[in-house]
Image (tube, rainbow, N blue to C red):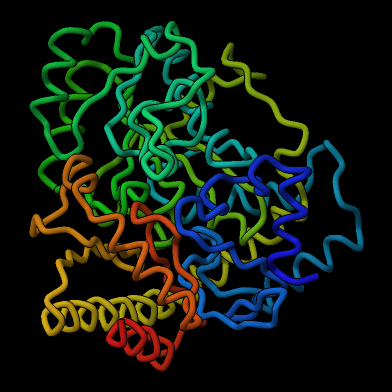
Length: 422
């Protein structure tokens, strides 16, 4: 079947024909390519068209598609069984590896997605502190857990939804909203609700209002506020963990969060998630403590094998990060040069191997409000041109581009030439 036929048939059986809204290419007047296979930095759709991939399964594919070591680890594990619902040596291997190589993680609990990780981390913060409220920031996306679906970034921005139907008001009452990179907005919440704030959750580098890094001084003051008021500081490193640096964004900012959430890269491309932190906090989890969280597929052996193969390779080859960042730097400087030549209103936000090209007149994008001022119609035109040129990138202005170890300088040159032709 061809792309168009598959997508049209899918609409009969899946809402919008997809299992995640952004894949539907809503409002772009083109159907999404239906991917048949991936290898290295490239994807091939069901029509046989080849694309250079800058989505990377929305971040996980830092080694590229079908990395030989990761695939081999999965195959060998599958031969022994697919799922047991029991302890395995593989989950010990990955858990121990993360705890021994990542700062601020004494113990870890495996789950199956980033949403599970952030949802469970907020429950743990409430259980540990005995408080009820969680502070989040406008534009930060922490998954589709009810309590986080307010001002949640890309999906709801692209769809034009203020939050989500089906989220009860009484749940939202325990979520306090602050402004990203604005410490005064956080101070005012602590002044009013300080004794009832269990934790503050933040993406140190937001990736779902486009890439918007937190200012170092903002994160430092935020950490001090949490300590002063006895609230837990939760870093959502679902996107940045093992990507912007092996030890995550916290290692680059010099912040020691109480709890960190992971997903994406840590699973090697398979459904995965985890949350970890200080031992005294993590020991509040059942069966040691009273905070309950469970999952039939948590610690699945194939996921653990793929994750361990990925993280081991990244840990033993730090030059991978150097290679990826060089490519990202080349892309950034090339885009800015073309924008200047063509008179395009462009702001490029890049943090290591995450980057967003904002079509924005404001000169800077440092907050949710800045991001929302971007020209989504112009982005749509660029997107359709780049797709036709064999470039696979996010169909939303409010997402990140991701680079991988499999990309080459020639790939970057082809991207820049396609953009210059636009």
